Length: 107
Length: 325
Image 1 (cartoon, rainbow over the protein chains, first blue to last red):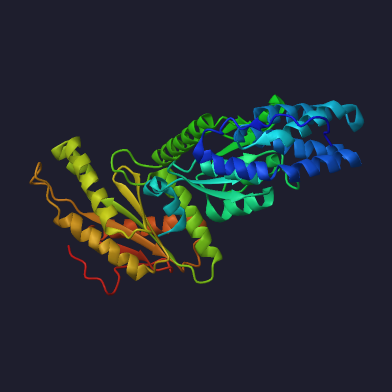
Image 2: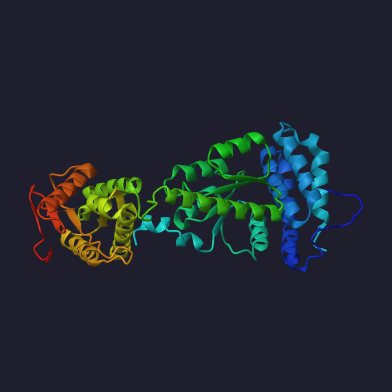
C-alpha cells in the first residue's frame, strides 16, 4: 500500500548480534505475510481483526529489535480499541505501520 | 510411589524447571526459546488457550507464562480454568500481556496470577521474574509441607494424617478391591519413662522411634506423629497381615533399641490395626476408632504387641505372627 520513494531500511537493534541474526531474519522474512494480513483487514474494514494483527506485531516487534514497529502497532491498536472503527480515518496510523514493516531489515 | 506423595517431595522440585509458554504468536515462542537457551529451564509451547490448558494438566509445568490476548480462548479464561482445577491450581502463572491496562492486571491477580509482565518484554527482566516466581513457589511448597510436619520427629503431623486418612479411607470405600490398613501405635509406659529419666530422654526415645518408623515403612506408607507418644501409620493398598508384618518389625526394633546416653532405658510399643474390609465401620472416624480399640486391647493384654480389629468387634494377635513379650 505504501508508495512513494524507496525509504531507508530500518535495521534491527540486534543487527550486530550474530546469535540473534537468524531469528531476526526469520522474523523479517515473515513480514510480507503480516503486511498482507494488515492490508486485507484494512481494505475489508474489519477493525477488530486489524487490531488483533497489530497487537501481535506490537508484542513481537521490539523483541526482535524493532521498537518503532511496536510503537506504530500500538498506536493503531489503541486507536481501534479506543473506539475508532472507521478505518479510513486511521489511514495515517495504518500507513506508518505498513511503512515500518516494509523497511524492517535484518541488516 | 504414591502419586500425591510424590508431588510433595522436595527432591522432585530440584529437577530442571519446566516452563509452559501459552501464546498465539510463534514469533514470541521463538524469541523466548532463544533468550532462555542458556538458562537451566525446559520450555514447552502451546499456541492457544485450550492447548495450554491441556498441556498444563498433562505435564504439570513448574511455571506457566500466559498471554492474555489470544483468539478463541482468552488468557483470563485459561487462568480461571487452571486455578479452578485441583491438579493445576498450585502452578504459578506469570501473565504476559500486550496491554498494560490496570483493570486487566487487577483481574489477573484476582484470578490467582503470581506476576504480570507487559509485552514487548524486556528479556533480562522476564528472566529475573521467572527465576523469582520459581523460587517463591518453592518456598511456598516448603512452607506448606512444614505446616504438615512434626517439628520434633520430622514425621507427618496430625493435620496431614487427618487429611490423608480421610482420602485413603474414602477411596478404599469407593473402590471395589481397594484395601487399606491403619495402625495406631503408642509407646508403652511413656509417662514413667519421662518421669524417671527426664524429658530429654523421653524426646530421644520419641526421635528414635520416629526414625525406626520412617526407615521401616515402605515409600508409599504414611507415618505420622498423632500426638504425644502416639503414632499413626497408613498403609495404602495393604492387607492386614502385610501391615502387621511391618508393625512387627517396628515393634522388634524399638524393643531392641539402646541409647548410649541413657543405657538403662528400655522402650516398647503397642499396636492396634484395622484393615479393609471392615463393613460395620463407617468412614475415617470409624476406622480410627477401630484401630484405637485394637490398640486398647493390645495395651490391656500386656503391651508390646500388635492387636488386629477383626471386623466383628473382637481382637486377636495375628495368626502368623510370632509375638515376643
